[in-house]
Image 1 (cartoon, helix red, strand yellow):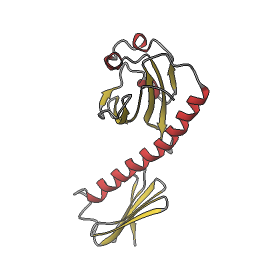
Image 2 (image 1 turned 180 degrees about the vertical axis):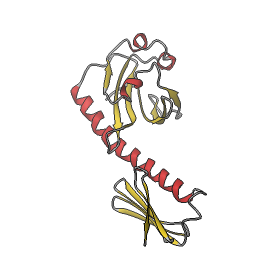
Image 3 (image 1 turned 135 degrees about the vertical axis):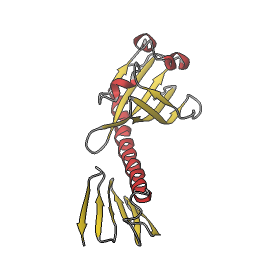
Image 4 (image 1 turned 120 degrees about the horizontal axis):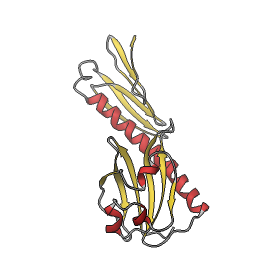
Length: 194
């Protein structure tokens, strides 16, 4: 797309975001976290694609990072999870004006769709690992096999914790105890007697 900067960020609590990848023009930059207040990204995380073709620093005068980068234009698209909640955003910025281009918008939306699915999968995986290995759950879970399935690839790990399955972004945890703890990606818990 011929732009100087791009980054992919995930939403954090308290109107913050964390860049997971940042292209700084000629190499990857350091990941960073930032406050969304007063930034062009604040509009994107509300679920709207945004394009600011020029005068970016004047439109967002409190965003000092734009000044540091010399950013003049911006295009951002939200990353959605399966329930259409915004979980992050994909951004391109340039140090020169950026024309409104429907093709560029479509390309970003396609990449954002795939990135949103991957970010949701990673978040579900992190939640699954936290649940399995949290000390609060450990007494309930014992002597089972855990399996992590993502798309066509499967990773089998023998453990004394739980039987877990993650497939196509939906996961569940099942333990062989007096009851079984069942969780899905929406973190709904239920007890089921075997």
